[in-house]
Amino acid sequence: MGRTGYHPLFMKIPLPLFFITFGPLVLFFLSFSSLFAQDKGDHIWLFGYARFIDTNPIFGSCYMDFNELPVTVGAGYWGVDFDMTDASICNQDGELQLYTNGNSIINGQHEILENGDGLNPNGTLGFNEGLSLIQGAVVLPRPENESAYFILHEGFFIVQLPSTPVITCNPFYYSEVDLSANNGLGAVVKKNEILINDTLDGGKIVATRHANGRDWWAVVPQYGTNGFYRILVDPEGVHNMGVQEVGVPMVDGLGQAQFSPDGSKYVHLSLKHFTVNYLNIYDFDRCTGELSNHVQYFFDSNIGAGGVAISPNSRFLYLIEPQRIFQFDLWASDIISTKTEVAVYDGYEEAIPLSTDTLLAPVQFFLGQLAPDGKIYINVPFITVRAMTVIEYPDKKGLGCQVRQHSFHLPTLNQFSMPNFPNYRLGPLDGSPCDTLGIDNTPMAKFRYEQDTLDFLQVEFTDLSYYEPAEWSWDFGDNTTSQDTSPVHIFPQGGTYEVCLTVSNVNGEHTFCRTLELGTVSTAEEAELVTITVFPNPCRDGVNFILSDYLPRDAKVVLYDAVGQLLKTQSVQTGWNTVRLDGLPTGIYFYEIWEREVRLDRGKLMKVE
Image (cartoon, rainbow, N blue to C red; front, side, top):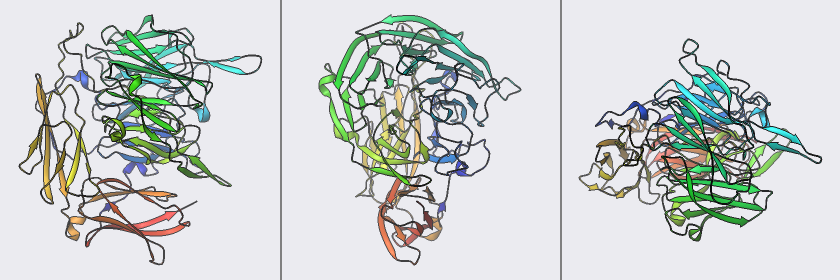
């Protein structure tokens, strides 16, 4: 039987949570500066509600872990709840260092740091003790200090008008964490330091790397104006560099902001009173922190919520509405004219069991975030669910980006939150006037792969390399090569292949290899080596089978009821496979996974209300 079960984080035990295993062979051609020590800063994503875990197991904390691909997920039971504000950071090994829900600062062992509570002096704002501001905080490493971090975060006041209270975002703070303080347990050494005392457009705190490759820029929009505060983070601290007025005034309101991964574009979405909606696009100068060339797209739509995300190659902008997703080409001379619809909500509803009834929750679209696996993950507005939508190939034009609705499931419910990360894998802007620190973009190779659903020998490789690669060289381990960025390759036959990608530029090269087991299992002993993860269990409307290190020739999952009657047979490939259980009554079921005549795995499932 295959190695089946939950990632260790699923266990109901106190944490520290994270351990890292290194499967693929990684060959380092050159050593790299500690200035890039945070290139795995976004490898752990956190969600959920911890406080309800004793009363309803569908609530709880959960995580996504990108240290190995495909991404793994799991549930934990740490005592912090998230609303819309959700920010964290990992170290260079992808280990969680600290995170915040906007109201507290918590370390990687899920304990509130010394002096880490009371992050908002005006109290909490939001459901379930998490701050209810989209992108209400971001965590940045303090340059040239591997144990120190800055958290940029926003406060609020509630102004009572004659008819209704109004939330006003003011002031803007920063706090500093030193993980070497307090005898190595870490402490918040500066808290709620006022950086901006002005009325701001709530949340939307985003950052990008300075062109010198070491420092950081953050941009914070004023409320209802065309003004933007520029925040500089350098080894000396956090600095308010003043307001820049650019373009026409913005409309304040709900929405999301993003920098493009290369830092050349800044995008700001604002939705006002369900009717007046503006998408603002700017060029960004990574040397000066200044915006220019404002392009504004107005759309009159009663959407109420929405977000934006940008592809890994920085070309395609995705405008996310609750029922539609649009793509824009940021490289075009007329960006707005390239608007292309790439997804329409398909009507899917997730069944959420409550104490006395079952709620059917629409799994629509809301906030987007680019992940280390090169995909864009999208959460859900208005309601709490486990399902997320994924843009599988966001670098591809039009429908080729493949928006797969409700295709990814967290083990517990998520209420609005989406982690807010800068691109930690962005280096200096070579040749720019402020490229003065002698830091080079020496490329790092990385890739993911997906198996074709019809031809098990056809594999699509997606390049995930960073630090400005200029050339790509693939060796597929079958005496064939390619210089394409993200090739599709057909292997001659089943077998074991070591696939290596070498990326290079004028500064050096780097090689990354992964071993592909392509339809090799033919005995029970070989089946024991296949890793299969099954979750959630107990389950409700569906269950996921993840083959993380094996590409099957002709694998199927077979589902039986408690008396052995065959209910369903479904093909499975490497990676994530979801088997729907809609229409089946609650109870005990059994599954088997077969690779032709060899059983890879078997087990029991429990479907609950």
